[in-house]
Amino acid sequence: MTTETASFTVRRIGEAPAPSLPPFGQFIGGTFVASTSSGTTAVENPATGEVLAQVPAGTVEDVDAAVAAAVAAKTEWAAKTPKERSAVLLRLADIIEDNRELLETLESANTGKPAAVAEDDISSAVDTFRFSAGAARAYTTLGADDYAENHTSVIFREPVGVVGVITPWNYPLLMAAWKIAPILAAGNTMVLKPSGETPLTTLKFAELVAGELPAGVLNVVTGSGGVVGNRISEHPDVDLVAITGSVGSGQKVAASAAGTVKRVHLELGGKAPVVVFDDADLEAAAKGVRSAGFWNGGQECGAACRVLVHESVAQKFTELLVREVSEISVGTPGAGADVEIGSMISGAHYKRVLAALEDVRKDGHTIAVGGNAMEGPGYFIEPTVVTDVPAGAPITYTEIFGPVVSVETFSDDEEAITRANETVYGLAASVWTSNASRSLSVPRRLDFGTVWVNSHLVIANEVPWGGFKGSGYGRDLSIYALEDFSRTKHVMYNRG
Ligand code: NAD
Image 1 (cartoon, protein in one colour):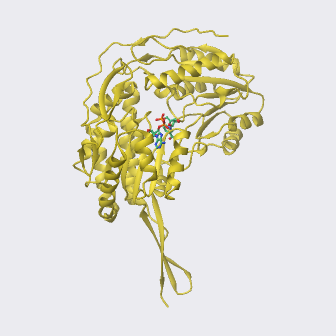
Image 2 (cartoon, rainbow, N blue to C red; image 1 turned 120 degrees about the horizontal axis):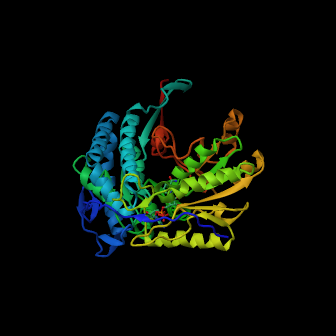
Image 3 (cartoon, rainbow, N blue to C red; image 1 turned 180 degrees about the horizontal axis):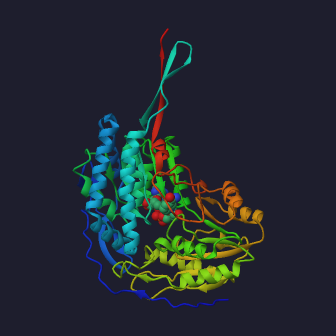
């Protein structure tokens, strides 16, 4: 049954300023150089369908040149003191901040995301660099001591070496910043491949910071996952590979990395349950899902996309949620600071989300609001709430990665916990309750790397971000990221 109640339109008033495009080439050894191939990939503005640029479809040889540059730069960068590396990272933060408008405009043009989301992305990226600059200096190892007779142990923390990084399209510059800042803070050099769909802000960042970083410390190679991403993963001189992306891509990266036994850092997909108990503040929970389920158009690995609500309050909660979602404003990036969701990232992803909505209809669920494609140009989809979802329905475990939230019900706490954990993903979850005992006990039993209580999708640089199970391993943000991107070495001195 379908009961679409609200009608949404794409607000298109206001022109977004023209984006300032980066140079197009591979950023290797501190400068943009031509790819070894003349092949290119079109980069689109998904809010208009217009082609913004053609970027090089990189090759194995491009990656090899970038890795060679990172290898050549690694001894000198690793030898810098934390204070020196920290000073560089603070300058990179200032450069992002000084170019905030340019980067926000470019990010929105390449992703269709609203101004409010682009602003948040850039502010968060600045903060990641500032946090990492401080963390680089605050990070010490255990003090030297004697653990065997006449022997003194010293534990050093060293960079891993050359780190390969592969980023997704949902927060292009922010996901790059989450890697670049701790990787450089820990003294590594790196080769980064942005998503083929959204390389523009990463290339722009490279252009802006080229004068501040020693040549070869950061290299950027554009191209496909199958060619460039795979070569980074298998390259014998890459010591660790980190990917933020889908589970399938993470599996491929880990398999390619196995040949050289390199370390792997995986930030993969999610399907975050939102467990709403009968004692919860239902209005707060509904507002929380409006914000955290639809932020970035739901193209968010921690999105509050799967509500499990106690059956006694399900009707009331659903009414509140449907009212909230009916009010969501959809628009182009230039259409105002109050636009909440923009277009889907690409035509291909738009088709994937619409196909998922077709499945929802075939599975006989109720579309309480939204559920449709919106008028073009651009790839817009209505904010959608799906109800009458039984336990085990595909929508409860499939990552749609769009503006779609489903609502299921449960009868008691045990069932809520079991069902919330019934997913291959383990990235994030939230619990909504006013009961102190539940707020302490339920999060401990949820198998997710982040659990919020009476909140969802609040992220801070001081605390780790990363998943369990199919969502991968490795931590972004916090001191734990610096730990992941470094290695310990024990040196033992015989004093006898
Ligand atoms: P994707 O897996 O399609 O692509 C991610 C990156 O992997 C891209 O750069 C792509 O080119 C590359 N890639 C693809 N195949 C590869 C291969 N064989 N070898 C090496 N690299 C390869 O993901 P996406 O569609 O860009 O992003 C959406 C996904 O990312 C979602 O599943 C989302 O949940 C996840 N994500 C996770 C986090 C997190 O922090 N856990 C954050 C953002 C996005």
